[in-house]
Amino acid sequence: MDRKAKHQVWRKRMEDYESSGQSVQEWISSCQDEITIYQFHYWRKKLKGEKNEVCQNEQNGWTSFDVQGFTTAPTIEVRINDLSVYIPEDVSDTHMIRLLRVLRRV
Image 1 (spheres, rainbow, N blue to C red):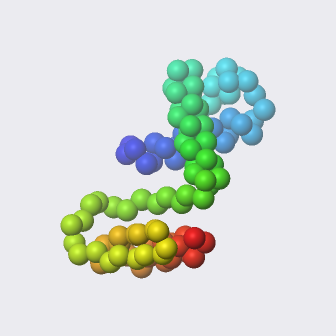
Image 2 (cartoon, rainbow, N blue to C red):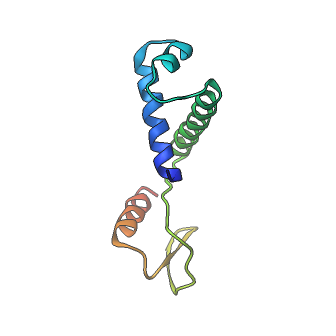
């Protein structure tokens, strides 16, 4: 199982646990997958940390998204007041649209 799939599985497990109303021990005992208490607490802390980071970024007005790979291709520079954004010329339409939405708020 790759990293992204494992994240999804554990995110779903945490949602199931939280909606179950059970204690951690009860939920692990009733879980069909073999999960240890250590795995549970590791993933609970990891996912909670990610959630807090996302919330904090949203409060600060930051938006993030993944860009696959690093490119040394020519770039486009967009300037708004003191803000400069460098965008690879080969950026996908989807990423460009997301970026423009963010820049409109600046």
